[in-house]
Image (cartoon, rainbow, N blue to C red; front, side, top):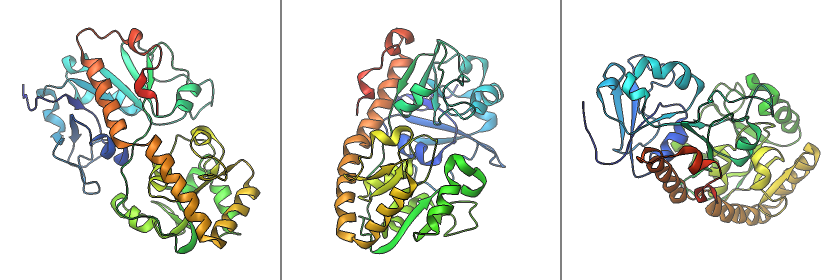
Length: 333
């Protein structure tokens, strides 16, 4: 067996690149599998994100020969299929964490999570997600997002709003295609992201801060999803966000104070016009948004929380229900 580091050794898959990048900023080693054809979850490090030396690629066929401390699942495919194809029987018995990135999609309140195991820790990324999922017998905790500060401060000199959602038209009402379509007829909006026929197309994550900084505001037309990292990043950059008052966003944006949030799309459209007409007002809300982001999405708090969870589940006296039946202090903002 290969022993490669004294730090905690976490095996996971490359599922959400931007989240994996922020996770990789912590004090542990991450190991991700890679295949020649780079199918889903097996992309390796890729060329998009500036991963550090603590993110290691392992060829698919060699994974079983490595020693890990913990397995981190990030999708149903990881949990139901991938682990049995890539991990040895001994590795499958290691401490296990399932990181759930999403809200329930089939039913907003009754959907049972794929994990139903008192010896697996389920980590949600928002308290709303934890509330809405039926988490079964699985012990649960929450680690809210963390993002880094931007090297490009918000300037907002371009009188347009920005939306960055991949494949928005195909993803339909859930992600708010119809709302984007309605609002864009009244307000100048730029749509960025993979698979969009309209707008700027894909903007790679490292290029987003500079691209985003010039737009007057960030618009998030999503009805039902987890808290988007793009929203956290825009706020950390000092950019005002306009969004629907749904899911976890109602705990992040205070209407008229650090952005605009409402369930009335006409109200939001009026506030977008206000921001377009008043750059000073946009900068004021953006500065307050940055204060909020610094308080809620501090990257050190985020990586420290993850390291604490990794150390708890890999300790010899781990009692999952005792540790996580009530939320630990790491879940606090």
